Length: 305
Length: 184
Image (cartoon, rainbow over all chains, first blue to last red; front, side):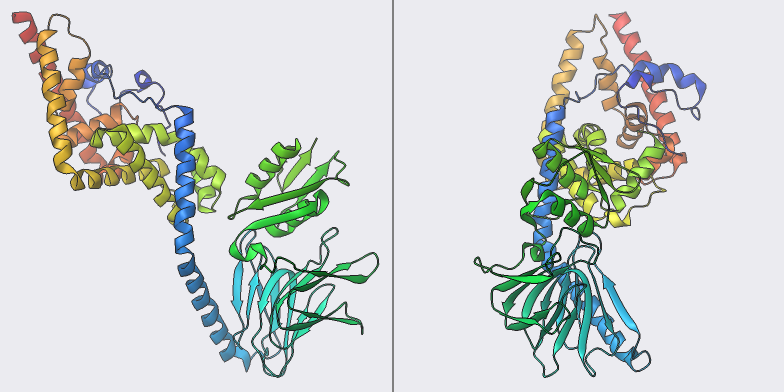
């Protein structure tokens, strides 16, 4: 289809077969013409490449609001369409899933918004808002709920959260082994339970994690009073156990990471990325820092000694 | 990098695979800078232009067609950016260009006794612009006629005509040159 690459040796350039043969001699003769020296070193190339990535990131920052606006328009349009269809499909479900490693914003019929982190999903009945406001999630999500007399209820795999109008973050994966469910309130008042009668009342900057082994909640205070980093497209893992770290990467990117011959029980990590990164980049970084080997498998990755 | 690899790479870049993009960059960056230098005469300018092109390429990655040569597409982008740059800073560079040319001519006349290979570059420089461009892409970048056609936005047949004409001109010019040096 296309030519192969022969930049390295210009003398190897063969005479194009569709040219008249009597020009062959001239073709070869002029091949010895001195060229502009291609004095570009590997270092220069790498510098240029990081320059390019820098410019791409800088552009992305300024373009972000536009992208978000588009996302709003799309989600609003989707919601309007859903509203029209509600009468027909009252009891069927709507489901959204964020692409792996990226975020997705969903605007609900009442104007409440849900920002889903990588690979996380949200579903709700098409009748949302008519009688009740109940949604289900799996994964990580940031909620900004409009006030209403109808309570807003989140069904997460292990936890149930009930609010009137507020902003809060939920982390609760069905598939998790190491990642503990976590609910953090930014504004308003929230009631959290593990689908039992016991519920925790949380207000601004209060959070709970849920421990599966003891089946109980542990309260904590968000002293920094900051929003979760992932909302801005950042990745931040604050002193996670390596086991949880790898699990979070698996969940976030929708891939699988096999741990081979590694005892991770006492290993912890703190990692921060200011912008979205590919799973390869992250794994390569970690392997350098921790001295692991990373291999790409047919499906997913393998980390070993 | 062969066509098959390039096609696979295009598919990966479409999927926002940064590694694939970086690999493509590493393979062709030097060649594109050299190509851009044919228009803008300065390595720094050429490097800037090529980097801009790659930023642009990442922005339009979802529109890439794996059935079309990514290599040619980027050649064409580098060409356009280089020509735009020339258009915007035209005066500065035509001046420079003429200086360089006259210096070279002087050198040729003083060193006529030993016909070194720089005469080939001189004669190539004197080709009509389009002929020269098609010839250089074919001879020095190793591109096929259909790839050059995509880059120069003409038919492969026209590319062939340009190259044939270029070679004929070069052959006659070189005969002429040999004749002259022998008569002295």
